[in-house]
Length: 262
Length: 346
Image 1 (cartoon, helix red, strand yellow):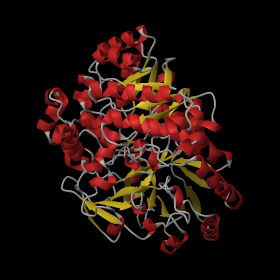
Image 2: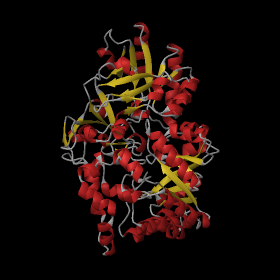
Image 3: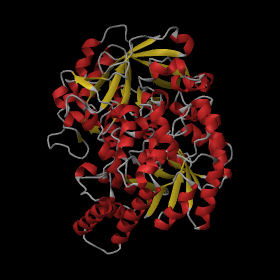
């Protein structure tokens, strides 16, 4: 089992230990949190010095963000060729390949059903419904399409209601990475940490203050069996219970998030 | 610029077309699907009965009426599916094609590929659940055989402009009225469809539509019914208790229902002023949301947007056009528009 640590800024390197053979670095949810070139180089150099694999995490992106990311991808290709790019926007698939980096399909594209309320109902639902709500992966035709596009790994969240990996993905030989312990729940371009304003419409001249880096809000409601954590524009839940027998399920990488990845 | 309007009952077709719709879109939610998968794994993110047609026979009637008036119909399958559900989804797509629809609105790439693999030549539009935020994603879907891309509702006008300037050979569609979700459609994993299981009486009243119709005939405001459902059904509308070191960052503090997801705003969002910009960006299609709305509201919405598009022909300067549209909005809705309700405010 390969273990990776997911950090969103270079200070997270302090949490690294030799059990982790790979570093995930970047942000999935907010363009304001795309790392700078300097931050990227710090993490690349650390990976290089310690002989670690490197996976650059990208999110849902606009054209402006793609331009910034391309400059970072060029830097990765130069220093650590063959590294992975976690693709969470279909538009990034070709971009990653054009830099000779290995595309991995991220958890934003896994379309898992993450609503915590499912946990309370799952035992009462018809079997087929329960299967849908536990499923991860995307069907035979998309798996074949991804294979043709040099993809052989899919990333998923650790659903509290259990996970059923897509049979087509397994039969096509895909590998799975499991994010642990935080699952993303939903995300927006309207950031409540930015006075509830649409960040893309009301950017401060000085840029985002990145209040999400230091602050977390916890949301509780009687109908939600788990607390929800809000950081910036995104909501998360935590599931610290790891499913048993990961390897037999087809999961061969754990992506450990030491904190909520914002 | 063409208006793409929602329809959820066959009898609506004639009056929606008369009001000025250029295209219609709809879904079908069959008893078979409901029994097998329940509302929690419905074919679209609108599991309410009033949001979809009840059968493919009804879809045929919509298509026949629309085609007799030269109007196209798109069939919506805007959910992500899994496992054995794909066979159901493909079966629905095939039946819709047999009914004569002109296009499928699909968000799931596996279903797009399945439809093509089965030899169907029907046009495919990528739905808002397909998360198109940039021109590379437009190219991606174009390569999958998509002929129209529906852009995400959280894009700003400038970002739409960039996409339009960098893409060709594919139609672009944007949202213009109603229901701007706080969360990104294709990335929100809050489930819809809890009400039927947790609040069966409320769900029954909502789905039969009888109470709504009676109250509507008395000209009563029925938006409270929608709100009652939303505040129980949608994870983003619940009255959460907030705690943590960042609670001062969140307006409202005790509950987030208002600041996180303003239901009034959700129901009333409007982008009509932006028609001025969208025309200059050569956006060909504008979508009105609200499949589950009353026919009278659908007609009102179409007439409003049709009127706004007609005003473009007057050649007004930008500010004069926007002032005219704001006045039209007030005439139509009996309240002022404001940035709170704006799809594309700057």
